[in-house]
Image 1 (tube, rainbow, N blue to C red):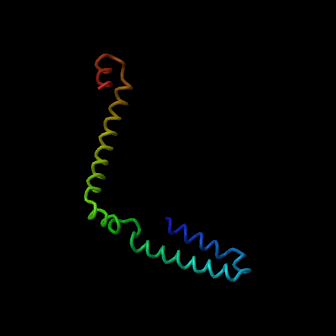
Image 2: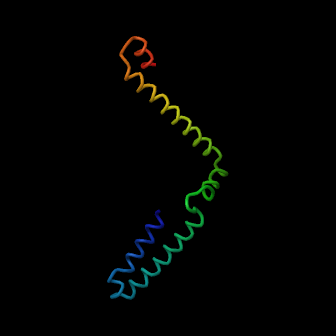
Image 3: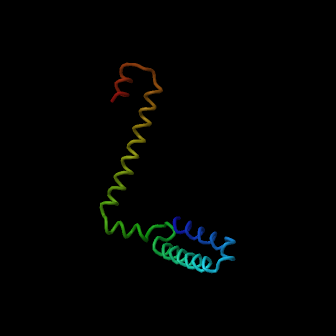
Length: 105
């Protein structure tokens, strides 16, 4: 997204009327635009469209603990959601001794 934004900025600069008036400015902006398009093209090759593979596979092979941490986080998030629904269920029930004890737990 960042390289796409840079390409947009360079394109906007090229359409600036100052480019028509100042040849030196036009030359700099054209060079900047070319560089941004090359950077975007390079990024698209390396990162891809966000599908599996590419950079994330590289990170997984270099940092195997990253994959473990992501899985652990997902499991913890599922546990949290499950427990949160239990809490909500007990909060809706009548406030009796056993219900309050379970809610506290």
